[in-house]
Image (cartoon, rainbow, N blue to C red; front, top):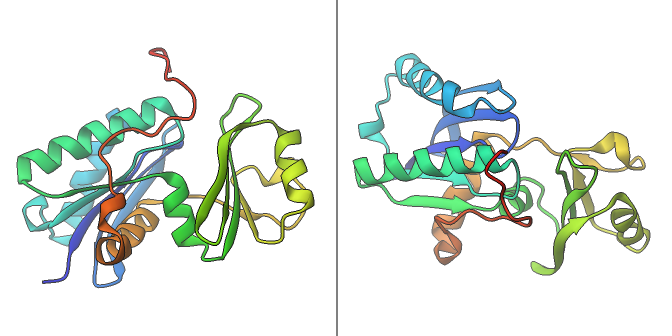
Length: 204
């Protein structure tokens, strides 16, 4: 039986959910909530169940991003995903935002810059599928790496950088699609742990 995946993306200001089956999103719902993921999540979950006729009992897996991104969003998404996974005895497919973005934008080389909303960026450089560097980068750090870079530059802060970047907005569809492919090719990379590049603070 082909997986029917509940996809969850809460690492940014977007709260996004979908049911993914046979290579497509059967149904999805999303809302730009800022930091109100917990208050919005279950209303969206009920919405996609009612509109599709699909129940959580029908799902075979739960897929979720685990960071880097909004500390609050990551914690909410992972906590809910773990709860649904345990309650339904469903495998939990946790992927980093970098892993999902690499799937969304296929290329041999990637340079990622995710806006941290703190005047810097969650950055990662991949060549030939290998991560060469990763961390918290300033704008100058990103620009220096861009000088010699020939692959896909992917960012959610295109206004901060020269033309040529690929706009990045991850959704639950991207998470579920990536998880479905990884499930068949590299299932060992999944994790249930949050992925932070900066230590979390309780007030975020």
